[in-house]
Image: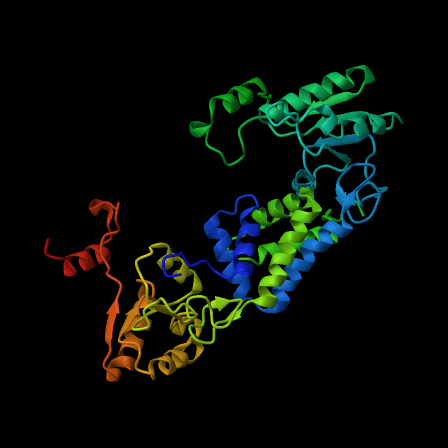
Length: 203
Length: 203
C-alpha cells in the first residue's frame, strides 16, 4: 500500500478529469477549479451544474438563422424592426454577440457553425449553407456580408460561398481588412499591411 | 426593439455568468466554454454537471487529517504502512497531491484549509489548528513539518503554529528554501538568493 501513489478521492478525480476536457483548461487549472468548487457553497456549485444542464435542455438552433436560442424563431429573426435586406453570414454564435456589441449593424444574421476545413474534414455539407440558400429564395435579401474570420479557412469559406451565390445577383461584401484601431504600423504583420495598402481609402 | 442591444438566450447568458464566477475564468473564456458545451454531446455536458454535483454530495473532510475524501478516515489516514511519527502540515488538499507525487514522504498529513491572513480576515480560528493540537495529544507524532507556502502568509502561519507547539517538545521543521532546481542564479530574486545562502550546505 505504501508504495502505491496516493490519488485523491474518486469524485474529486472525476471532476478534475471532466474539467480538463474543456478547451483551454489544463490539468493544473482543472485541479484548482475542482478545489474551488469543493470549498464553494453547495448552492453555487449546484447553480453551475444546473446552468450546464439547462443550456443543453433548453437551447436549440433558430430554424431561420441557426443561431442558438431558447425560442424559435430567435429574438433577432423575430424583430420586425431589423433590415431584412441585409444578411450577415458568420461562423459562430459568438460572432453575432461581437457584431451586436458594435450597434452598427441592423440587418439579420446567418450562422454557418464552422468553416470549410479539409484538415478537420469539414466540408460544405457540415455547414449551414443549404439553409442559407433556402433563406435567399424569397428574394428579400439584397446584400450578403460574409463575416467569416480573416484567416485562411475563413477566407476560403467566404470565397466558396461567394461563388455559390454569384448567380443570384446579390451585393456580396466582406468585412474590411486593414490595420486594427489602436494598433501600431511598426508591429503589423506583412499580410495585414498588404491588405491595408490594397484597401486604402481617400480622405 | 431595434435600439436595445441583443443579448444571447437566457440559459446561455446564465451559464456564461456561472462560469465567469470561477477563479481564472474571464468573460471571454466563460463565453468560449459555454459555446463549447453547447456544441458538445449532451452526455459530455451531463457528465460534467454530474461530476460537480457528486463532488459536493460525496466529498467530506477526513475527521483525522481534514483532507477532502469520500471515505472517513481517508486513504492516507487509513494506511497502516505510513509513518505516524511524522506529520506534514499543509495549507490545501492540492499540496498533498504535490508532495505525494514526489514519493519521498511516507508520513501523515494535516490540512489547515488556509493561512493566517489579517487582510482577508482569516484568523487562527478559521484554520484547522485546534484539530491539529488534538491529534498531537496522543504523543505518537514526534516531528512536525510545516509545509505552508514560502510566502509572507505561509511563513507567518508556520511561525504562529511553531510557537504554539513549542511547549510540546517536538521536532518542528520547515521545507528548505533555496534555488529551485533547473533555475538560474542570475534570475533568482533577492529573497530566494538570501535564503539559499543562509541555508548553504557542505558538499
